[in-house]
Length: 290
Ligand code: A3P
Image 1 (tube, rainbow, N blue to C red):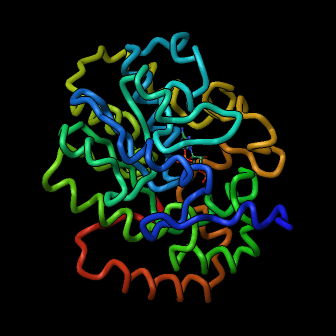
Image 2 (image 1 turned 120 degrees about the vertical axis):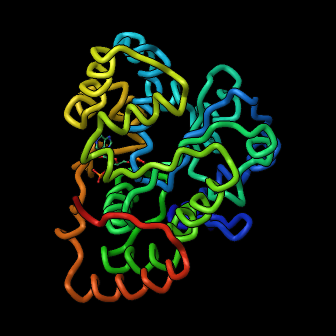
């Protein structure tokens, strides 16, 4: 008989562990036809996807907060490879909106995005904070297998045996692609340090010019405190069978350097040595705290 935990084991597709319902609809993802004016937001999970998506939706709507409350963020900026029985699938939603988001590594992105030379925003976050955030997300978002203890989960994260695979390969893969494609490569830590400057970078990349007061409105609306209490941004519109915020809220801490509250000295030493090895030869640089 099939036990509940075996239902939740990840499948592997093109060597990347992924949720089974997504893999079952893979043909739809692979054949997705992007349009030249589509904008793609790409991230490794837990890197600030929701944050940058809210910023982009506010920009498209010229800072109109009420318009940005028309629906939940996961419907305003649909998740391309998403497929879940009982919820809309990402590829079905994409035709109706100008921007999409994905967590796919470069080698799994539908080729039409490269062929159409779509603009893409990649947002990276330091690996240690991602691991901590992912550990909590594994517990509250019910499509995940049991993460085990923090130490066990950290080992899986380092080995790339988590949904979407290796963080190291993901950030490096997109870092290389930006040399040849229209990719704005951003960092969560920069957004924490100077969100206004980062919003202005996005505006410039999208060829949008907004008045300073509108930029300030976007800045306010997309702050952690505002998004945490905004039901259309904080994922509380997800059914509780899919996400249980009482286990850990989706809008958890929203800070840089929280990893220091979780990594032991020994874990940190092992992690740093492994990180160095994994990132050897890459010019990718990321701040571990701000
Ligand atoms: P923490 O778990 O560290 O708090 P994603 O949207 O890619 O799943 O990423 C979720 C992470 O981004 C969570 O991190 C969440 O709190 C954080 N986040 C969401 N909105 C944010 C904002 N406006 N400012 C800072 N962090 C934000």
